[in-house]
Length: 374
Image (tube, rainbow, N blue to C red):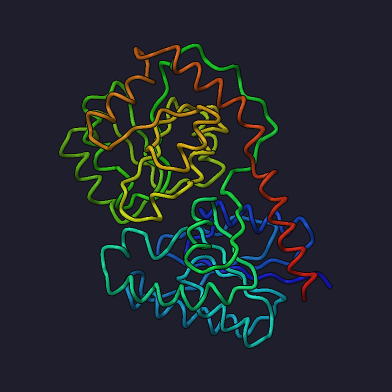
């Protein structure tokens, strides 16, 4: 009988590309995989995947009551399931997963997509942060296997908890389709693309403030806590009426990949609002790179290290609107054509070296060794 693996998240499964890659790779390797997530009020029907999926419906959608209700429902759901290993994604699903693994005597796996105790929403509330730190201090040492998305976060976890953390970077699967040659200058009919959550600390307010001074159009894909306030800001600035800014909402991964290939510039901006952001390594960096699209990125350690090696982005030292406008205009029509061409060319050269095809080998090795130990 093949090994059964259960993974748990609080996200909408249709848009969680990292979990789609992880579960898809493990299913292709012969594991029976179940991914458990959350049913949002506006969730679309589940997209077909090569593994089983289940959504939990909750009455509450945010705050303490949500976390309490979701964890209770998750525990009750897991108690009725069997598996050979149980994997929690981040701290917000960890306690019921650890308890289910403990009750069954099976391995407990911890996959840290971020440093949960250092995300802006937690850092801003010291009492909440202390609570989650206690959860982290309890959970991490008890994991049979632990891994995260980047070397910097792995080092931080190891320093905090004195245990090894493996790294499986959040890189998209490389399409076998070849890209067209790198354009000699920024295409005239392109646009600036932001993909990801519309949340605090992503530099989105500053990006909108910069747009009246930018020689291009901005498309934002995703939703989040700032969805309404960002739309109001864009409306006040006249960016919606002029068509210079467009909110696409949630976009399915396949559609998003096609949209990314059409972009002129990608943006990946963060404020230093906690160690999770400061040491982040977001999948959008690799999504832009795979599409051959030059990007403007915050000068944080992981991006600085990758860019020193591959030179696929212009790094910005701050999020002042004037700084962002200057960086974007440099890579837009009428800007520095030679620099645009070089970044686009470098992205094409780096594509084969940075892909999920490489990362999944480490993933499969870890789970193979985990199975051997049982």
